[in-house]
Length: 463
Image (tube, rainbow, N blue to C red; front, top):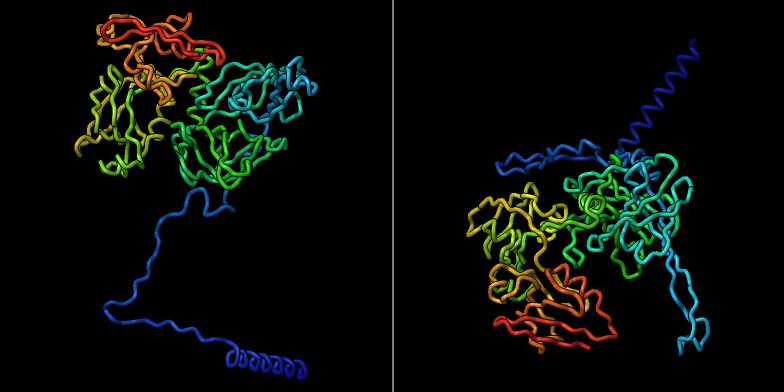
């Protein structure tokens, strides 16, 4: 017993010596200085609550969304047949050519259990044969149902023997910047690839007044047409494009918002083409000398520079100089905010606009109309449908009025004339004009019959 007591005493004594030595020689002293002056330091505390979805990436669960998505994303193969010379003599003289198949690949998203698939227009463009491979490696031939090159959306269909897993469209208008998203597709022919990122920006314009969701989820060639989903597995976008000097992912990519894709699909199924509602306004261009001089370069909203005659905007009482601040529940900071929302609407839809007119906010209802003007292919003339006033002035009930002429045709006296015939095509409206100019041969001659404001007819021949 005495031996145990002595060992315990030695152990305690050794521990005390070790602790004292550490305190004396190794531990650094920390001091907190408290000032009692009236202007003492203030401790800033952030009381902003953390997200209910978790404090960081480790709190986010992508597994359920990924599992629900990969089986609804397919591999799309586009086979096109091109004519190529078989010998050097064929190359120079064109005596005979062989058919050479070319294969392109992309992705698609199943949106119904009976086999409807949405993809990009550029994935299936000019295809002579389409093949779809599911995640279970079953391959089907696909039928093209319809396309919309403006939004780069296409709808194709397969005929499966069983019901397929599919994704439901989410509401892309309520997607938030900073929200986690997954990109699912087949980059480099690697099927069922899932990458994660956040929504970097919304209503991003890439040059054609389109409205894309920008994300930093890795998207590469082959991802086009694939799904962009949120952590709930809702389809919020169709992956479409990357901006890169190398052609591969460099940190950001773009997707067509699901609300636009959904509307395009519904129009194709119901009408056979895309129904677009237009306001009939032109915004003031930004980042120009004229905009800077007018003091409108940094305006928060869309400054209206032109209101078309007999347009929806004119009938709603919108004036030049009005600034559109909001459409329905969507804040409008720049033109793509407005065009992106309008892309989800049809002629006849009624919207509520909030405009700033001389620093007074007005609420104006507006009923959208069909497009009244467009730029025709080949020649690039801007034309619009005739107004009732035009029909009286030009003494015609059909035709389209030329409102814009490219530089190379400025010397032909085309401006403000009414086109009534192109070759053998009678022109009744802008749709007729688009079809007629689209069929012009680059190697033949084109005859255009026009009417002037005094009723005289001109006949121009373009070689």
